[in-house]
Length: 67
Picture 1 (cartoon, rainbow, N blue to C red):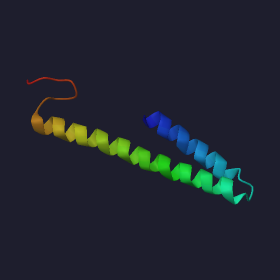
Picture 2: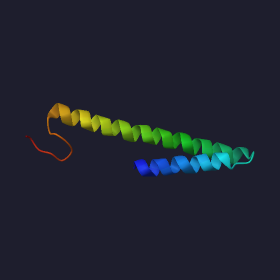
Picture 3: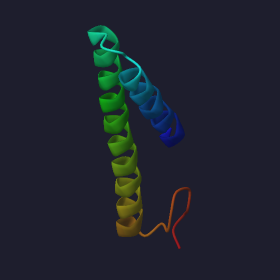
């Protein structure tokens, strides 16, 4: 998921840079880049939440059982 979000960030940046004054393409690129950044933040936060919860519960990681 992280790789796909980074890919969309690159695509959005490419559209924004190559818009050549076309407002519609520039807006499309800007929105794509912003949405990709939001996606990256959600992915990172979900990973952190899973790690914190697994430490609090004491499973030691995803898929682990009771030690």
